[in-house]
Image 1: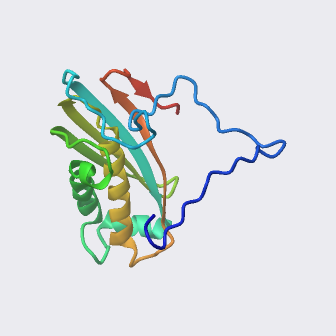
Image 2: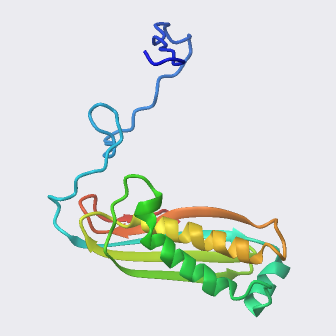
Length: 185
């Protein structure tokens, strides 16, 4: 045993009455966990490349005055939406370096749409990512939205710091073994 490290035997106590066991998801297979329960990168080499598209969205909520200033181009740090769009594109391309177990992918398209929503008030950010590959691009689309929203925050925080990001989610995906997916509205 290494010095300073203590081995603790697992508890043999029965669960307290009324304690719930861990939920089991029906038909769920955690593909990034091996038979020993350890994380590993999935081998996709036997899969045939197919066209795969993922769309994700999120929103950044802010005061109306902040929204108007960004739309008018009056943020002191420059072109907020242009910087956010580029940051989202760069983030999608670098997802494999930031999220463990993601494969590097030959992405063929990344589109970032940032639209003002006065009803929020704020911006709705949507990312579409496409690849012709052996694994999907859901994480790349989610990463693009997340970083685009964070970039809007950092570019506009001189106006107000009370902005918040919410609703980041996968809207749809096509292609691959698991088939198509569309989120409920």
